[in-house]
Amino acid sequence: MRNLIFVAFVEPVAEGQVFLRSAWPLHITLVRFDVGSPDSADAIVRLAEQAGPHASEALGAGLTVGEDAAFGRNGTVPVSLVDPHPALQALHEQLVHAVTDLGATILTPRHTLSGYRPHVSHHGAAGAGVKRLHPGDAVVLDRIALVDMAPDGDHTIRRVLRLWSREPDAGSRR
Image (cartoon, rainbow, N blue to C red; front, side, top):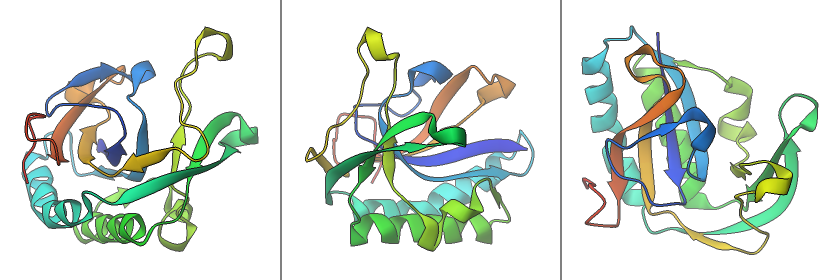
């Protein structure tokens, strides 16, 4: 299986960019899923084609960061919630449908559709300068991406496979 994820980055990224698993740019998870085999390039192309119009339509939506919360097992993952927004919810739902229509398996089904709680996880150790958003911060939905969670089978890195962006110099396609 190939583990992929749709995200909305809130920090600059470029198509093809590779980063360490421990060094994710800040992002809002849209939907995480497994598809086919590790070489399922045709499925990824079809998925990007289906997702493209939805991503392009959502670009430019203005979001607001809400309160802090704790996610994960035993509430050990600090996050900044993102206030509900119709464009973000619609994008999430459209991507969920595109993924399931392709026959992919959503890894966290109870956190999708009506259970979706958009958030940005805090990154870094508490004493070493945590990278995070704060309540009231404004975020523009301007970088939506499909990311490979283990390119070439390497689980220590991530790769931006496709990027839809309002920034023409970011290697984007609209």
